[in-house]
Length: 111
Image (cartoon, rainbow, N blue to C red; front, side, top):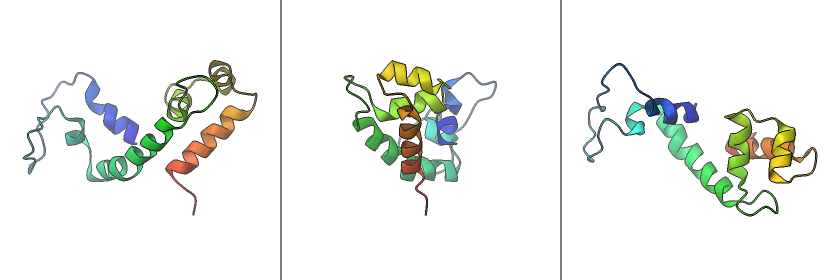
């Protein structure tokens, strides 16, 4: 939901989108947060931002610059197959799924 909400304003639209009332901080109608519903913005601020910060700082493998967040985005958003992820990131066979499930569990912990 959050990924779609953030990307919502990245493409041309046939209508002019006005900022929501009450915005006085100088951001124009092109700010992607102006296009979010209240629940999307809450999820973005309270879950997505902290989660991306944590996973963007954690290294996945011995390859320099390999971040856990990028691995998850490659799988979930770009639909890259697990075997290709393992090859791309130099991971042992079967470990991409473990990284994926662990990372998604950290986004929405089970209670």
